[in-house]
Length: 347
Image (cartoon, rainbow, N blue to C red):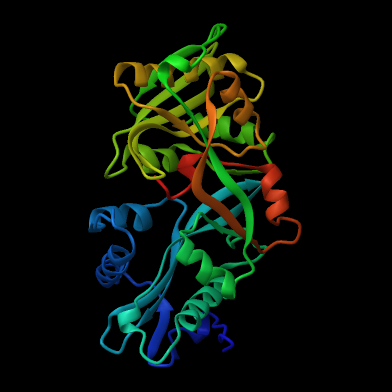
């Protein structure tokens, strides 16, 4: 069944018994009810999502979010396709990526429609509304899907696999430290305004990099409703040349590990990397737990951490992407896109 593509002026629209439309304030209550019902069925470790967390993730994100929803005649959410917007530097110019999250379709509310047709309508509507070359549009759709979402998504979208994601792991005693060469390290509770300048400089060495400014980073880490994050800044002669964010948490089926949530270091400043790795290892020395970091295997950090004693280990995850601009497909993203664990919705 070919999904109808709706434009702004066509919404809300009917699809079978469903009303398809964009999110409106107040919808979060029905969204949460369906989310908690659907995901509890497929994940034995599932913890019910709170309204506080939903508002933080979607309503408060400085980069924005979009949701396409299907409602039953009774006003219940039968399906959703949501994206968290990532403001990015794409080869030196501002753009946006769309990270697909919380894709769901409630079998108990799908009367007379196959799962794929409803998911297809929502996905194609999202693309029709938001994908394209404009500065406010999505240049790329991406995600780290669970198997069920991957099976559903690839049936209606031309997703490609960017990479099978691996992680880097070490015990604190295994991390080899080196001279920081004049780096001043400081642990802080808030990010300085100058972090945007560090991000802009880093963007010149990465083809694609999510914007990391004070507003985005403080939303992501300082105001996270469920994590208490540790933040370290590295300066050389007073200039910010790197930062790292870490917290104890769950990832890839493991609980209570020290996760390196975010990391950005001047490509030419090895001392900053040495200082921040030593800080990260020091957290695990004080509160023993395995250290875990995640980077693209095409980036310098992947090898730097191995040289410092981290080992490569598999994860259950893989990254997928759908390009909306010619030239920025999975192969290009594999080579040029810099991300960390905190760019994903996995933590």
